[in-house]
Length: 352
Image 1: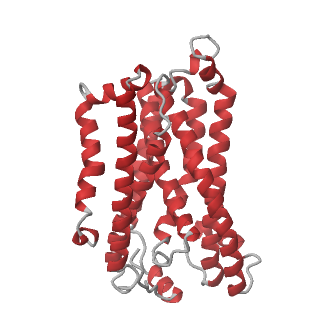
Image 2: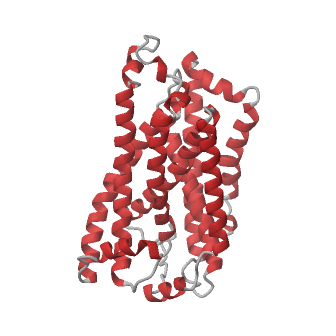
């Protein structure tokens, strides 16, 4: 990071500005309307037995959940490395945790309601058509247990971490926030003591939670990627697939963070020190670094499969580099790696 001091506005000043800055009511209604429409469309497709509705639901679940979970993980990483540059803006990513309880519900809907529509191996378990190792791994009880325990533990750690973080602000600020969350704020304030003591104990707890979360995040998302993405082609396997999935979510969360910083900068002209040019540079450097890392993972997976030339692995890329999917595959590489990599090489681009 820049190594320079980032000034954060006083809490009272920030809260005072936030009280007069609310999301436009029209935007809320549009967002709610789109959500209801999307859920209704999915419900109709699922009720009529349309497998594509379930497939679309799974793809969207995986995409948005990895981004939300990675965003919270990034917050925890700031605590592990005791970063100072992000203290004034990290709340933008803490808000990603709000999606995770809904993602947990979505996962239960997927594994219990859409199993026969999504997983081609589901009805093969116990028939002898799978090799013994996959027969064991794809056992229905084991599958349910992996999905629920893995995501449940990750959800617990991430919600717990953000709860402790938000509690520090709620405990020392006047009543402020949505009316429906008044009960939650009251629970946060319960037992809240002297600020310095609470700050010390909370930071100590967060250090432990952050390390535990990092371990569960890395391993847990590998398991979830194997089960809910790679297993859709159950003959294919790759030891790097899980990394590519959750690091893809990590990269997108950083890019979303950059967009949020740019947008919020324009929303708070009264607080020019909240989001500064230095923040743009720091997030730009991170975006550049993890763009390179994503490219490294993707190319490493490809080159190993290419030179090994094993049938159970090569068909994965054969399908994606021939026929109708070749254009999509090349666009993914160009838009995810080439454009941001060369675009972020410039200092000017990082601050744009």
